[in-house]
Amino acid sequence: MAKRSRVETEQTVNQILDEALKQILTIGFQGMSYTTLSNATGISRTGISHHFPKKTEFLVRLDHRIGQFFVDTLDFSSIASLELSWKKALQLAEHKAVLKLFFSLCGTSDDSVTYFRAVNTAQEIASTELGDNGVKCVNHLIGYSAILLLESSPQQKAA
Figure 1: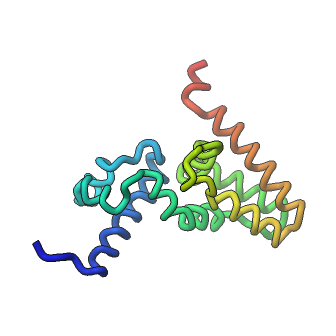
Figure 2: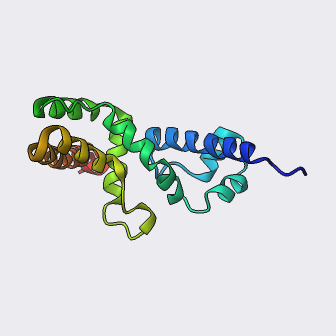
């Protein structure tokens, strides 16, 4: 078998990452697996695990993209605009998935995922654009999101 070029390897890795991002945003990180990635990309599970030996490595490599995806829908022009845009984003399944991922990673002992950029990026932009009140607003919205996601969880509905 001929050795793959660096360009071909990079294309394969990007194909895997693109699909991983899509699945994280649609079926969630927990639902994504080497099997679901293999089925969607046509790349063997072994081929995927060669590039990503641990599932959390997807998060490390996609951290910036997930963070950018999340903050791109937020309006940092005022506190009211930030609150409104955040609450609108929470109505979209993909944005809920980002926040669910954030909360699922809180307190994790895996060093590779201890710094999740989506929320940090929102805090940094809010700080730059709106000062301390912007950071307080983001922190408030994180709490709001946690309660909203908890109220909409299947376990809560069953109770």
